[in-house]
Length: 125
Image: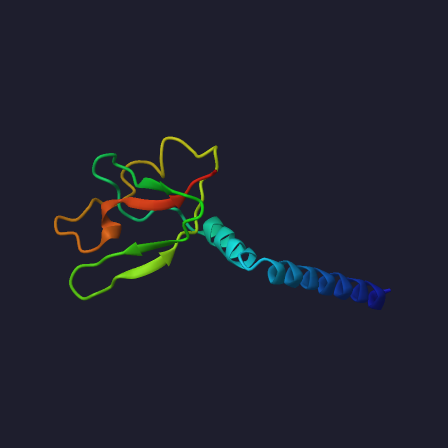
């Protein structure tokens, strides 16, 4: 009985892996979408800084086809490109990212574009 159960579990696992490989082979963007979905489930959409005008991080909504963002840093060159993982649904929460007081203000001498409190998020359409 145990051997039969183990055999059934192995066959089910192999068929699931084969189906997943066929989906990924047919659609090159499928793996990127799965990666973005998993990343967005585990991490917040905002940075650690708030926007001075709103007191919360601000979501800059970009088209759903946008996949990369560029950040700039002053001083030693740290200009980097990052993927945009998060995508808002139509039922985004209100009033914002979290309770006031949980984010840092923009420093008096900002050294990076992430410190201004603007965060790129793909739109729901």
